[in-house]
Length: 194
Image (cartoon, rainbow, N blue to C red; front, side):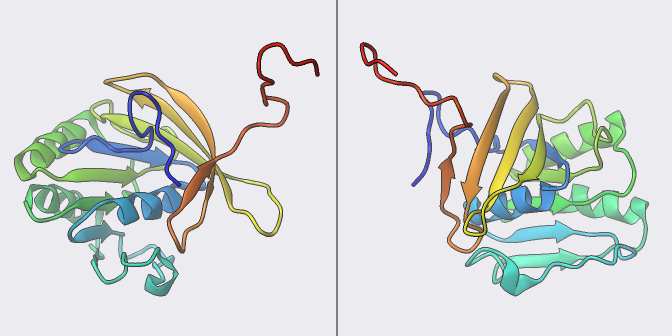
């Protein structure tokens, strides 16, 4: 089931632009986005980071399309991001910079994404993004029962629209997601007593 508002799917990343995700759930958000984009996927992780992606743990169909780049330093990582954003057949570029992104780097990424027709998603540390980013998401896992994987995704910067906050039950294997009402926010139809 897909949730859509009157203005469209709230989780769609604008194409030809670069977006950012921060918080402990940023990698889950990136996996969610990777499953939604067609074509080759590039994930750029610094070589010094001990965490590596488990391809079999990614949503179905993502591992087969994913190309993992491991640059040795931040300068090489920024170069990889810019060059892969310019590559026209790439559907999504995900990168995990170690240092805060400058305004200059952010603008260069936006120009590269426009040139390549590619979407970018930078997985940043909290408050380490660029002012040039199109949108910034704060992503946190939520406590839930054993049968559920809840996430709170907050759109905290959006150059072209409104901000929002959603609790999502996302199944990483099937990529299905459902909106979850917060406790106490269920509304009765008009005229019915509580």
